[in-house]
Image 1: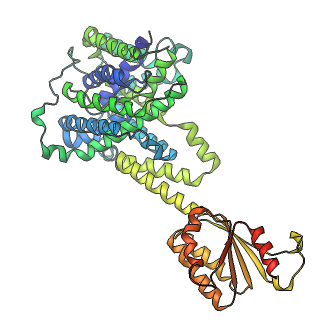
Image 2 (image 1 turned 30 degrees about the vertical axis):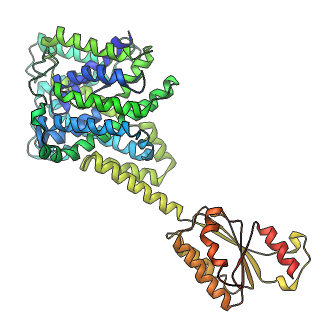
Image 3 (image 1 turned 135 degrees about the horizontal axis):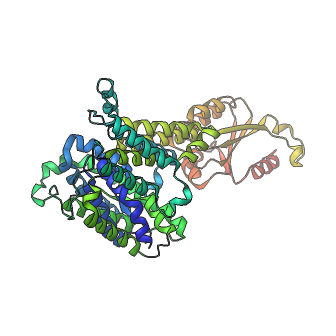
Length: 514
């Protein structure tokens, strides 16, 4: 029953994502069937339901525009091999290195690309260009909407928006919308674009053959394949993490990558497009009571059955109806609660990462967007880490219950907190320059987790000037790594600084000397 429920949700989405990818509805159906069977049987969690997704369809449109469907088939095979190797080499935790705002940003970017890609089908017009932006700009001189197509798309869109949520538990809104639109198209003979022929075989005419694979072609399509593999990894593992929390059973991330790799290597030989785990279908499976991998396999079986029995009817599905389904899907893809929280908290770093990734996803592609997001995230983290805290306190002997000593006047303790490296070196040098005139300085480095060569050289220069001014310098409370880096400073000669375990220990020892 869980498989049947998921199939009802997956059917319109498989058709829609097949069309929106630039391939056709048949490719979407074949992908859902093969992926549901192969990947579902091998996945890292029994709850994972794989198939074509909106995110993948969004990046395929650009590849198909340049390389054609044959190029996508080859790229899918390469991407599958990359995913398989990633699983075998235990790289399943790589997604944890991607900042959350970056993931939110490229999800929103992909959602916008999907929405822009449906303008043609929704309005019954035609655009030109290799990506979403160029096609959008082409409407300036080429926007002639077809009224019947637009009205049908609008009615289906309104139905999807206002469909009662309590009914969705029995019949998914998208399935109802597709059925009603198809019936209207057939009964009233509406002059609108249809999906077209749906095959009754899992093997299509345009599919990958081993004879077409050669080194030059593999080299040419390697970068698009990396984009596909990267998206497949991110989407599948994030889906598994979310589903794992719902079920209380963690995803075996490396096994999931192996499954995705094998599935995507097989799919092109049937004429399928890339597949990933889909959070919407996976959550439906869990809520419908899925307990084993059979839920995903049965979902694929029911999709195959519907293709065999209802192919002539499905071929009459209006493209405008699929466009409406995808417009609603793209809207729901945005992580609105996360975006709202970022804006409400005025987290400037997160907001900048989000918008930078979203815009680069739309303008360039997913690979560039993620790399840019990670680089920006690292830069922001380094910039934030560069802020160190330096506090200078006069030594108050009486507060320590030690008798006042004239010899202990003009001593200060400098407390430093934060990593000392090249980006914080300037601030460190300015603070040290202000302390050079005192009789003695105690550095407390308990809050310094690490120190690099630049900061170490600043301390070395400071000590050289301190010797000339007969200033005593003591280091205290050092972390093992910091102590190892600074050790050579007090091994040079007899006038080099000493170190103590704590500030209190250093002050007590000093007072005894006085």
